[in-house]
Amino acid sequence: MGQLQYTRMQQDQLNVYDDNASTIYASYLFDCDANDRRVIEKLTQNGNINNFIWTNKSDQKQGLIELYAGILFIGIFLSFLFIMATILIMYYKQITEGYEDKDRFEIMQKVGLEQSDVKKAIHSQVLTVFFMPLLVAGLHVCFAYPMIEKLLHLLFVSDAWLYVRTTIFCFVAFALVYIVIYVLTSKVYYGIVKRNV
Image (tube, rainbow, N blue to C red):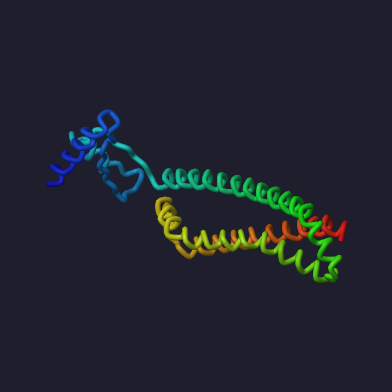
């Protein structure tokens, strides 16, 4: 029954994909000493086994380390790139809005608004512009969790608590960077608005 299904599956792939059909492999896994090749010799004497690949635990471990190191490098590189883009976008957005809002705040001050009230208005406006994207990013991560968990299972990471801790750490680190950007750009924004206020 198993051989019949195997052949039918192989034939279906050949009918659909023609030359691009994938090869179906069967694997046999043994927990034996790496120096004891008697089991391997008996298997290779069998005529049904054409291609035999011998691997051991240390080779597989090295392969996984290389895979994870590559993913880590790409993750760090893209994170740095996106944080720099975020800093530049937010900084220049605040400068642009500062020049657009300075006339409005000048009118508010002429009407009789106190300096402290102007500062509160600026503070609340900048807070909204800055921290709304951070909240939306957190919400996106929460909704993306099921898909990310499945992707991590493909990479042999099944510890859900590790993912949650790492996500919280990254979110807090990004929030700290965001707060620093907020402090710097709000000073620039307030300086632009204050010139005519």
